[in-house]
Length: 394
Image (cartoon, rainbow, N blue to C red; front, top):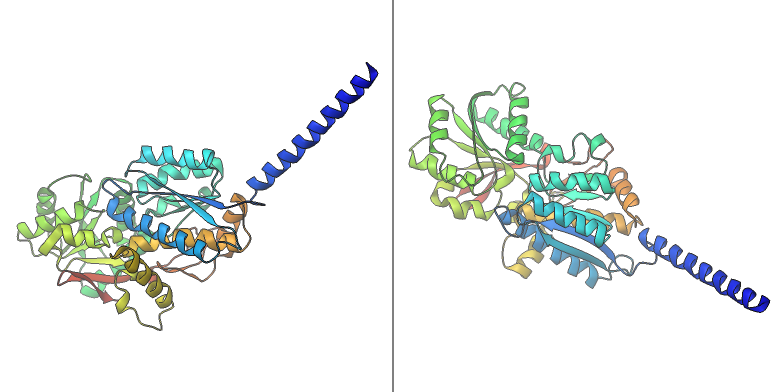
């Protein structure tokens, strides 16, 4: 009996030791050590109203994943980007975010394409303490930074786009404007900045109108803006709304300049608006017209290489939204290459070590006070001329 007791004790001790080793290995793997691959989650709007935004972001992610792994991965470790389509729905974005964070246990998250979906993902990122690099434009995604500790974003914020628009209006001698914004998160955030900065630039908003994303006609709102004697109309939204507005403006025969947000910086707007797109003005990043970027521009090499590779693979333009997909992933890759191989160290690296980092969107300088890291100077003014986006003003 005594021999059996001793044998049982030895077996139990061995099992406990093996269990401890197994637990230690699991813990190490969760901290990024001894991993076979670096899993990154990415949620973009492959389908639904935001598909013109999400498709180039999706494509850019796949392109870069293949390129990075073909070049040996991150210090010999491949990356695995798990892509999910939120179908332009906040509910779907939330569902996929929970799956990728809790089931797939990704190191970091990317996305989504829309501000509303990104704001829905933000709550989970904060709760689960996982770094999120968003492709949404609303400033509320990362502001105030003290309440967005785990969240960063690559598109220019509304504050930058409004500054660029108002500077352009000042140059044109336009003072009285009407606003027509989508009633969603992106449009609401844009209107906040249009109102907040108007006085500083000497702009007077004489009419404020809104529309719903899928509304088929905005003639009534444009008529009210015209009656208020606006010299120009500023539209804040993503397609199809702005394209509908451009058509309505032409059909009404109103000789009123249309200035839009950076939310339509793609070929889709021109395709939807047709001839009505001519003369529309937007603030935008530089990827929209790579051949017009000077070789001494700090972004020239990044933009030229990425645009060329994207066109070769997909036979289409990446647009500004492709630049967000590019920068979202490459910022996380930059952190991994520097040895930040767990969620917390990736977050810390992004906040403290991304300085003068040149992306396809602009030059980023993140800090504890700024999780967007861009300035209005990295935006340019573009217009539609002869059916193409053209650089109008640096």
